[in-house]
Image (cartoon, rainbow, N blue to C red; front, side, top):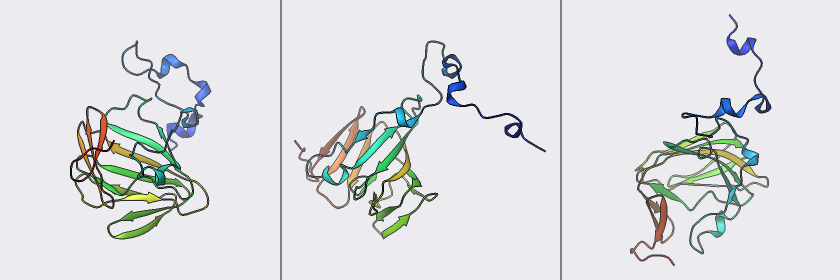
Length: 183
C-alpha cells in the first residue's frame, strides 16, 4: 500500500509561505527549515593561542540555533584538509554525536585512530573520560553533522594539552590545569 509520501510531491523551499513556517506563538518568526549554505560559518575556534592553530581550517554552521532548538545543538561542520575538529577532549555534562556526510576523518581517541567514512557515526557520552577529536588527513574537505547536549554548565577536559574549559551562563573560559586563566 503506497504511503502519503508516494502520492504527494515533496515541497521545495520556494513553495513555502513564511507564515506557514513560524513556530509557536504568532509573533515568533523562527522558520522550520533553512538552507545551510546561506548561514555564515564560524571559522576556527575560541581556543587561546597556540591551541587554535590546528582548528583554523574548521567551519561550523549552527543549524539548531536559527531553527529555535534549545535542548541540543546541531552543527554542520566542514574540516579542510589537515584540519582538526578540536583539541582532543571529553565533556563532564554534555553528550556528543557525529555523523559523517562527505569525505573521511580520522577519529582519534584514547584507544587509537579509526577512519570514519560517509554514513558512519560516533558518540561520546557525557562523563566518559575518553579524549576524542577528528582529523582530516585527506586532500579534500570532509563534512559531518555534530549534535550535542546544551548543558547550562560544563567542564571540558583536554587530554593532550595544559588546558581545561568551563562554561557558565553560555560563556567559555579556558584555564591551565593548575587553575590559572589563559589571557
